[in-house]
Length: 335
Image (cartoon, rainbow, N blue to C red; front, top):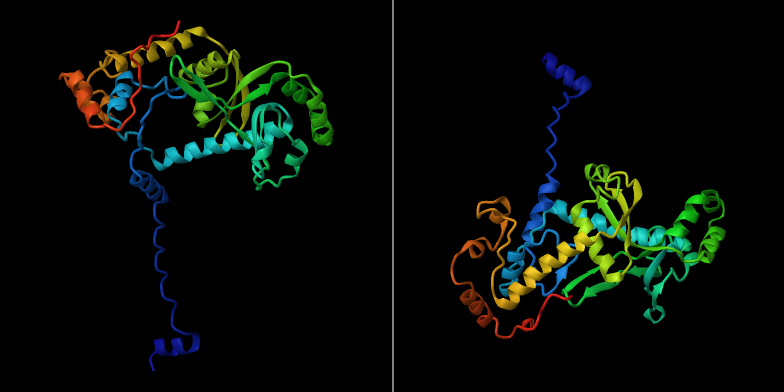
């Protein structure tokens, strides 16, 4: 018997060398592939959305009106960021601001819609406090839509907040900590006072760090806020901003600036006039067809084609005989 055989008999055979563990799959690539596989979304629109008007290319909107074409592509990263923003809205409206008695708007009863409330504070803050953290609240906030018929603009804000009630809560933190039910009753007794439009925003860490004051508000949010301010007649917006890392939130007050409303209506005039007259707007954010945005645009060929645009429009209209087109024959910019 060899020495090896003797050792194996006494101690057992030597351990097999461990096989290297297979690397786990790249889940981010899987998620992004899943998002890509769902294909681009269509942007068939007969209205201008306040939240997207800043970035809207007039030529792209007009081309898409006549020939609706799926063009919006989302990556898995985009979808998760938007899902985070959706949660941020839901949580602050239903689990924080609503029960605190500072958020005013439409409330829907998830048990029975017979009891829905409009233009109201939270109907039952005490009940909201009893909800478990993971439980769907009985009363849920509904973001009512806004419409500006003359300019064909639409959107929805995130509710109205009482600045005076917020100030009382900030000045009475000990009462809130030690006797929340009593604090909520006191809040409800405070006169409505000053109301402001609420806009809830979640951003990357770097974007949130660069947004500390009203002047630093990104231009696209300035335009959105001014459109809602003009629609409602409430010329004050409170941005409740948080980063997507630690969710350290803060409030930023932004007041109405008519220059942004004028810019919004200028773009709206360009778009609706072009559709009315069956022309393609001259102004375009792309310098040429090789500009980065033009390269990604599904209307790149049509946009830079010097052919007969009116004939192209007629071709699109004839190919959609059942579509109900807008009647803009008498449209003029509202005074």
